[in-house]
Image (tube, rainbow, N blue to C red):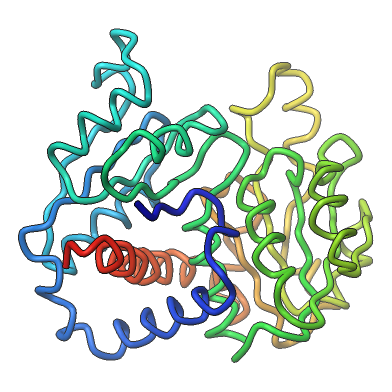
Amino acid sequence: MRSVIDIVDLSVEELDALMKTACDIIDNPEKYQEVCRHKKLATLFFEPSTRTRLSFEAAMYELGGNVISVSSANNSSAAKGESVADTAKTVSCYADIIAMRHPKEGAALVASRAASIPVINAGDGGHNHPTQTLADLLTIYREKGGMDNLTIGLCGDLKFGRTVHSLINAMSRYKNVKFVLISPEELKVPSYVKKDVLQRNRIPYYQTTDLEDAIGDLDILYMTRVQRERFFNEEDYLRLKDSYILTPQKLNNAREDLCIMHPLPRVNEISVAIDGDPRACYFKQVANGKYMRMALILKLLKEAGTI
């Protein structure tokens, strides 16, 4: 049974096909209103979420399907000690596809191996968040007209940021892409990401702590929040949380066609004064996420022979 746990589970050809489907959904929504009629998506969210959970649910409803859900671990048999595998086997009896978020890395993979229906990883700890990456890719494609020849700046929490790790994995497979990694020393991209993805594939990159110095070189600026929930030490979080705050003044040297992205939620990494700037694309990402989740649900249900 085909599941999507990591963005690399999808080939470049499949990513491009998903973007094509998403664009067709945007242009011709009526074609897709009944495609998943009588099909059920189970959303199993054992970690707080607004955008991801609601966009999965909106995606299934707009495809004509239905949703059953677990909104937190406290509201499920996980509170009684039930394993992820047993939960996945149980839910497979009720639904046609699962979207799962869990605080533990690898939980979605465990679920996919136990389930008899497709499982979509909706975020597992600090590891992967493939459908956020699908939202990011569609945003880049629609704003830039393609995926090649781009310089991408990633700024903020690059250590724990699962959206950052997934985006590096995805964009490294396109032509002539370069990365600028902007973070405090304590929150640098993990060495395994640099070694296994960037260095192995000979992707150009450089690391810096200076956002303003780097911003003029960028086609994409991908801001991230410093995640309080990933820290064991409150003092470290408080010391690092305001490392980067993007303001209109800091955009003085930026390109006129810069695309500013953020996976959201933001805390104060991007000033609200930037929201009206035509370069601000983070709320477009939210909408694009719904369309790409629609495309992915369609793909996996078709491959499963369910629709």
